[in-house]
Length: 244
Length: 334
Ligand SMILES: Nc1ncnc2c1ncn2[C@@H]1O[C@H](COP(=O)(O)OP(=O)(O)OP(=O)(O)O)[C@@H](O)[C@H]1O
Ligand SMILES: [Mg+2]
Image (cartoon, rainbow over all chains, first blue to last red; front, top):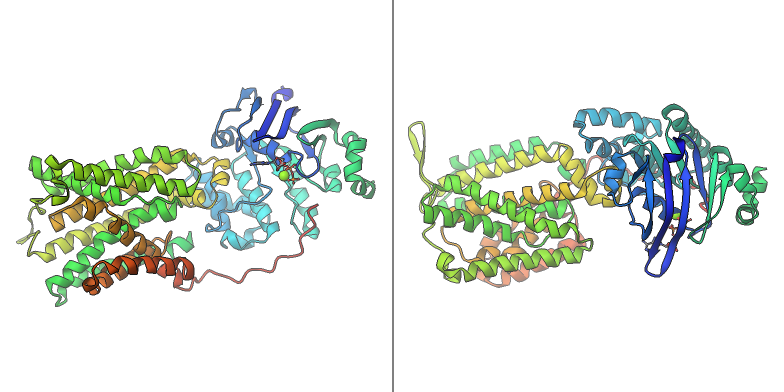
């Protein structure tokens, strides 16, 4: 059963002549946390875009819960349980923080009062309660990342794609953010895929890992194992030694 | 949403309603009532247009076509079939809404805003050309006259007359439409529809990733927006009693209305009302300048876009604006 949670089959995404992803196949098991590693431009965000529906694959398929979702719109993929955060945050600037979260709930048919009540719990979960009524436009980068997380959670996802959620977050609050992510897995049984540059964070968080380079899968396996791979070490060298 | 509606939008509508209720008791001559009537009609027109332009954030530049469609549909049906304008104005609104949804479909596929602008502008030009060429029905640019005014209605002992020489009646119709449209639209926009429209405007991809069905919501916005504009056009037709394609669907109408929306505040709920008031009154004062008025409107658009992009509605100090919190030190993102 677990093998059928998310399968990416021979996925290719090309922008003009550039292959952002080339014949990528991988599968993600339910209940586990998977890291996507790779240098800048490796295709990590493109992989998230393809899974969430923001870009159409040039070739290949994406199966979620056994169903081929490759041609479905991002909104219907969201309704089937896929949520993502954006590396470059996209807050709804003229809406308040809580209203940003309410969008996800209202679109599923909740009344404004219900949506507000439930949104407040996600805003609190990510630690933005003090900012709940502020326009999202005034948030700092770190706060915007938290808002991305709160909005994604409000869609009640089974699969959550986190694209560099710790990027731009002030260092002292990273451990707390990581413990939130761990709670998502433990308390809500959400399957998580993280893109993250900080190896310490990854060794701490992920069970499995996929290393991408120039749009191709180089190594997959357990997190420790992939971290030990020489191609990975050569890129993350400093980080791994620091973590060891 | 505070930024769009201000702190107490229902109270603001109540204030407008009370002001309009006082007008009949003031010693105003018919000319002033005429200008106020035009203001109310154009305010509804501008508010309807602002729904797609400002609230949904699509650069739609052809809404004068829906004004013309509403105006001509209501005028033609009431004239040729002898149906009361009280009924045909709704027909005008419905036909405009259908046209709005139909033009909405191709726009769904267009991602670039300049292209949205060109397609909608071209649509308006087509509507104008069709109206001028259907000479047997519309008499083209000679003008379609013989549009029946609203039928008299009697409330209690008094009968309210409409049409020429009855400035009060027309003012009352326009005022009821103004309050009704703004109240209903405010209720709609304060609900999840408004939340969703603004989310689409601020971040289409993010909204879609949160489960918002873009196509359905955009078509809905187009339908509502065109219906409001069509209704204002229909009421306009039975007020001025003569229509020409270029006066309702021509470039002057486009520029005047855009100026009202931009000067008042694009994407602010009450912005178009301020803009319509300011420009309707000033355009009457500048009547002697004739064609130079359009030059002035053009200049106003440019000035506001550069100097005060939030328009008059945005000039009011926003009570919720707090100083930006100094962001704590970000970790290096390698
Ligand atoms: N919409 C697009 N149009 C054209 N090229 C694109 C587009 N999106 C991504 N690319 C290209 O695809 C490649 C992969 O980009 P992607 O953003 O997926 O990398 P990434 O692994 O997320 O990198 P980073 O670590 O910098 O976030 C890059 O060469 C990028 O320039
Ligand atoms: Mg990326």
